[in-house]
Image (cartoon, rainbow, N blue to C red):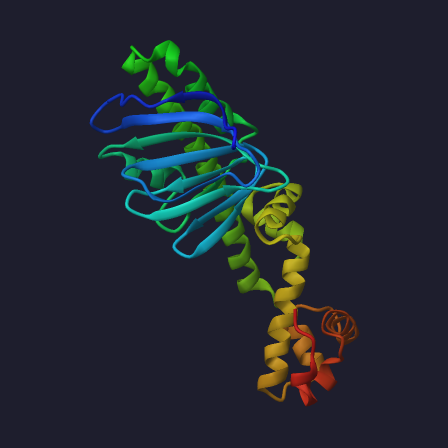
Length: 277
């Protein structure tokens, strides 16, 4: 017989406002392979995984979900979720609805495509979620206190989204700068100065977005551009090297062979044999 340890649960509808209604919620430590569904929800259901991992199936897609990740179940959609066999998850959840919920979710990082939210707020989103769950019984007769704590969850999510959007803008501007200036003798320092940010911060942004340094991104961009020129014209190797921002042909050939395991000249002759990244 399966034993479910539910530390906190409430299921009496609490109508906080027409914009945002709370129906139920709770916090549970799941047993290995504990499964819910297939089921269709009538309202929006948001889970936050505080420990362990599991799987979430929706629209024939399986999502592997780990600690500090939220997943959204939309009304009218059939879904299944299951705790991991070896490291079953613990999660808390809230079921909400209202005319402002769709807009609130979109502004907080969820939309019809993104059903997952990866908490990178150093625990602020998690703590806001748990705070609401644990204090529900204390404030169940004070709808204004409940409403403030419920909005606090999505407020912290929106703060993270704003930070991520600012980071994405920096990365996009950096890529635009590379595209416009790759043929010149530009460096990572030049890119950082153009953006008005620290070089170390720029490195961190590229590692988060592309799992590579901006220097590596710049090099790859130059090499891929050079590869296209090798395939599509009669420009000399030296001219291609200078045109793509390399100081000399030997440096270009060295980097090209290091990445593609072939020389530029041999690639021009036999492009189908090259190892592409």
